[in-house]
Every structure is written in C-alpha cells, then in structure tokens.
Length: 560
Ligand SMILES: [Zn+2]
Ligand SMILES: [Zn+2]
Image (cartoon, rainbow, N blue to C red; front, side, top):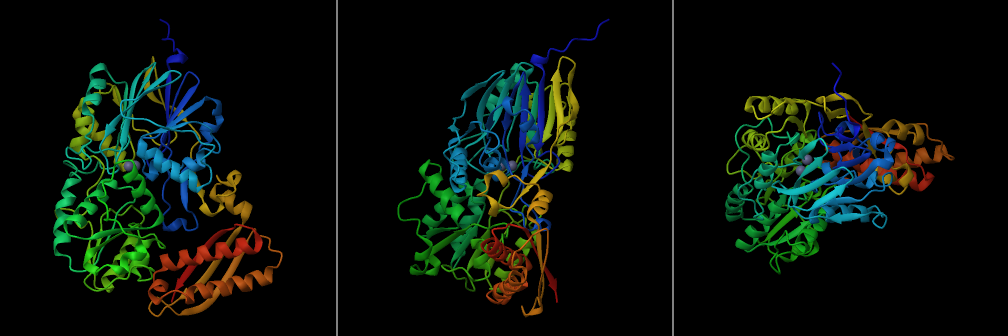
C-alpha cells in the first residue's frame, strides 16, 4: 500500500502571526500554491511594564521571507487590534489593502498622519464583494460588532472553504440596522466548510451578549437625571455608542462636543460616510463649551483607558483648557477596561470622585453603560452549528479563552473532524492527509516608539534593538505621593548613548525633569502614570532637540 500523495497546489497553510494565545495584535496569513493573503494587521497595547513603548506590532519576518508571494492584506474591521499595524507593515510589504468603507477611512487617516498615504493602495469593498487572489477567492460578509462596517471573510481555497469571523457578536437589533448576515454564513455551512476560525474574546461568558440597544435605556435615565455637565468616554471607534449619545443629547436639549484628535477625526469620518447621524447644530467645538450652560452640554472625550495625557485624563485632573469639572457633574465611562489598564483607569476614577462627580462605569448594574462587542457562548455555538466545519480553530484570545472556546466547540458536536487548538506561530496545514499543526513560523512582537516614526527605515525595531542602537536613558526621581514634593532630586543614567556635551546635557536634563514636575499639579504628581508619561514625553523631546538621538527613555518614580 502506498502512502497517499500530497498535491502541493491544493495544500493550504494558515499561519497566525499574532492574536492566538495573547491579547490583541491580530494577523493571520493564508498560503497556497505560491500565494499569500493576510487577514488583519493589528497592534497590541503596551501595559505599564512597557513604559516607553507606544505600540506593539507583530513580527512580520515570515511574510518578508516569502515577500513575493504576499498579494494583499484584507481587513475585517477598523479596531486598532486589527488595523493598527498597517503603517508599520506597508513600508516593508507594498501590497494592496482591502476593507469596508469605514475601515479604509480609518486606515487612510492613520497613513496620512504618518505621511505615507501616497504610496499606499487602499481599496474599499462592500459586503458580498468577491475578490480573486491566485488560488484564493475571498468573499466579505456583514457581522455585528461594537464598530460599524465589520466583516467576516470566507476564503475559498483549493482545499475547501475557510471562514474567518473577524470580531463579532450576534446583535439582533444593531443601532445602524445592519444585522449579521447569518444567511451567507449558513449557506457556506450547507455547502461544506473546511475550517472555521472564530472570535474567542468572550468565550468565558455564558448566555448571549446584550444588544447595543440596551445601553440606550441606561443613557436615557442618566441623561434624564443629570443636573450638571455630562462627560462621557468610550472608544473613539464606537460609532453606534456615539450615535446613542447624540440621540440622547438631542432628546434632552444638550449640545455635544467631541474632544481629542482621534475622537474628532473618527466622528467626522463616520458622519461623512453616513454611519453617524448628526442633526445640524448638535455638535460644538471644544472652545465654545464655556458659552453653554453646564446642564446643556455633553462632552465626549477620548481616553477611556486612563491614557495619561488624554482629554479625559486631563478633565479628571482639571487641567483641560476647555472643560472644567464641578461637583454634581456626571461622568460616564462607557467602555470596559482593557487588561493591563485597570490601575490607570482606577486612578482616573479616583480623581473624578475627589471632584465629587457622579460616576457611572461598567460595575454590573443593569441596564449597562457598556456592552461587549464580542459573542458569548450561545452565539459562538450558533455560529459553530451553522458552519459545521470540518476543522475548527479558536482565534482572538488568551490561551485560556481559546481553550474555553475549543471545549465549547467539542460539546456542540458541530465540528465534523477535529478542533485544532493553535497558538501564534503554529503552521496549520490542510492537505489530503487531513488538518493539523505541522510546524512553527518565526513570530514575535516588535515594540515601537511612535516618536521615531519619521525614520521609516528604522520604524520596525525590536525593543532590544532599539536599546542596543539608540541606548537607554533612565531617570529616577522620588516624589511624595501626598504633597507632590520632590524628595530626592532626579538622577539621569544612560547606557549606549554618546553625547558630545555630556555634562551639560545631563545637568539640563535633570533641570527639565524638575521643571516638568513643578509645572504639574499635586494630583498629577501623585498619579505616577501621568507624571511618568509627562517626564518621558518632555525628556524625549529635549534629548532629540539637543542631540538628534532617540534613546529608549524610562522614567522611574520612587515613592516617598
Ligand atoms: Zn479585536
Ligand atoms: Zn474588534
């Protein structure tokens, strides 16, 4: 008996380059007969441990190894963990990018900001559009999620159909009325699906994820009873949520002001594309806020994750130039805390409480001020049973979430052959012998300091590479948490940076740290996340101006 022969032209490899067994940084390569297509190119947000790093992107070494084979990047939706790496990937891979109108609009503004729009080839596609890339035919179809214009992709390959859900929940009453295209999903299932890759973010949650519409009931009761100014924050891409804010503001006679570069940009783009309906006269500029009575304004600020220099963080510390906060004002945090941000958000909430504001945040009370955009168990089961895949691989989640989703899939009995529990870097192969993990691709994380963006060639640097090439500058300072006083004067220590006028740079650098601290309020000085970020930004600017060098800057605050 001879072993079955394997035809390489019908062998399909799927390689997750990020997002499986980790939080964020979604990117997945599909490879067949000398063609590679990539789904999503997202970032992971650094946590407090990684101070000095702005974003984390997937290592694309595998794609660069097979550069000539890469034909396109397909984007499922516009969240940062799916599109954020595009500006860091395109300088190395000159390929067209495809996505829905809102997704492409977000990518466009991102590239514009990095001054690299011209070189890029962006293509807007609509639901049910089909594209051919060598052996692959790709069809996009509508799903519901916390952002508008989100797609799943069905990829027809010589080995069979592969479905990648992107991020989704099944919301029967989405704010924009565009429901999950379950018919297309089921039709693929009826014809037979080789493999399903499905979102595991909420695999630990039983039941159904609540509809976006339930948030409206809570907003309505908060708006009805609020006596002062309302300050609300949510993710800047949560267009359906922002629609609810605008609707409630209209109902209760308030104007709306969007704060923060990204919040303003995203809402303008969404309005232009028809995803956000803004009645004339509703939106005012932030500098006009002071001309309206407190109880006639809703301020929508970016920074729901406690980002130290964001609009919301400034409002919490009462250092925003256009918005002050007074006892009796209402603050709504309409977002969940991304793991790693709990402390920063917690400190920000403390600042708001100290100012005697009424604070609403996701604390389990119903109706909620925030609902998830990701499917819970029952929705995941529904997708599995409609698709009935031969192979199933959970994606988008920590290993725990992937594991839970895998177990759930086994219980449904919907997977015809087997569940393949894979992690970032696993090469999953489908051929005549079956499906399974056959090897490892080079993968990893690349840490990026956005300050060095101008140098495109230097953009993708590993953290160690950054330190080894540009050196590291550590500043240590002791600050009294209660009084904000500098207890021990700052120390500057550097390695691997050659300064021409070392003594002067160090002396001026130390003085600059002192000035930054002294220019901050006592509350800011007691919030180490905030003061560290201010010191880092100022030192970075100072060192670059003085030396044209960009060392890795690490402020350390010693509590006194
Ligand atoms: Zn995501
Ligand atoms: Zn998403």
